Image (cartoon, rainbow, N blue to C red; front, side, top):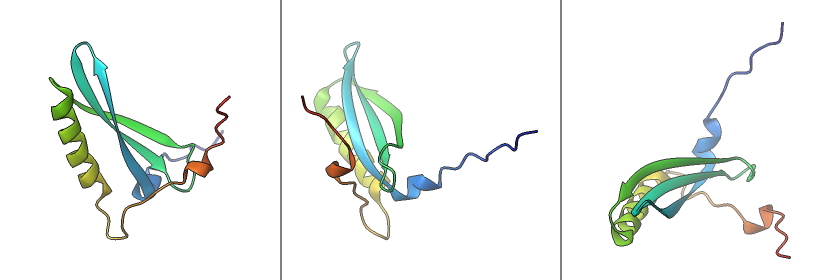
Length: 88
């Protein structure tokens, strides 16, 4: 019988937080994007809320990002060079 690996979200403690704002059906949806700083290919996107205007969505996204980034170690960041992106 195979052993079941326990699902862990410990990597979220070291994740960089970014926001995503997308227009869907006349509303602006705000999502938080968590990117693992040690393994940038590990990403979690959480849709948080939707707003009637882009301006309100941007204000909410900024507040959510600031709250999610609070860490006694400081803000966690990834490097764009971690991704192998071909712009052709």
